[in-house]
Image (cartoon, rainbow, N blue to C red):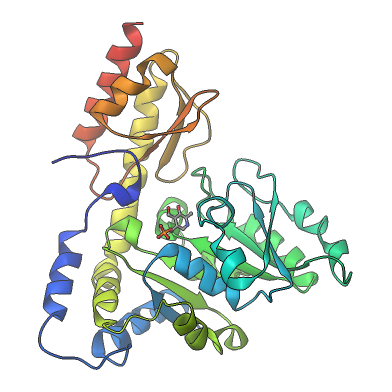
Length: 343
Ligand SMILES: Cc1ncc(COP(=O)(O)O)c(C=O)c1O
């Protein structure tokens, strides 16, 4: 089987998700979400996130982020996030284009935003010349593979809420955070002060299944209309929903995420045993950022394709997936060792 460490979305689809899509492909069903699979998906999402969690399924993660943010950001608002956040760097300006709002970045520390950085934007509130900070967007786990502890989330939410701002969480890999911290999704989101969440399953074994979860009726109110306007309403919703059902029933989401995390840890440990290879950020979920000698990168990429993240150091990113095996990891570690030792 071909494997690569480029991204967790380089992986394929978990067989149980494929089977669920095929099973949903029986005859006709009412469209736009009024079908039994979507009802079941909503029920399962409520069992993870609480009875007050209103969910809206979407096609992709950028769509989920923009939709979630649109419920809490007016066109004159600003979205406060780190300079490495997906919202700021990898969505081709979608939030700015669709919302008309400003994405306002602060320098992340290990990919994380801190409460004092929110406090520094609060004086802009009420000044008519400035974009109005309305929402803090944090990514869990971060784009650098690090994690916010529950206390850190609570502190961020406390400062944001005290200033009248909302908290959005980009949870494209929230499953990996739950597995790594051994904590329930509700505890890591609504109970920690998150108002609106993008919850992704695509990177964790689905084919394409993401959702916006609103923890507040005021936020949920307009999301159905916003989703339609933003072209994220699936007519054949049952096929998105069937993926959620397959992933959430029987905790497949958690087992997949746990595998990916463990394989990243194994890769990090193996790589750390090689001279001249060092971890750049703490490995806390399923991403490994490593500094490797630049001479070996092209050869290593032929074995297992991956991205060079920071060309100057150079730092590479290796992401483990739900289907990464110990053999794949160990073989790659040996290839790295051989190439580096030969320098
Ligand atoms: C942190 C984060 N958020 C969201 C996304 C989802 O993006 P997409 O629109 O590609 O599904 C990604 C995908 O790379 C991501 O890494």
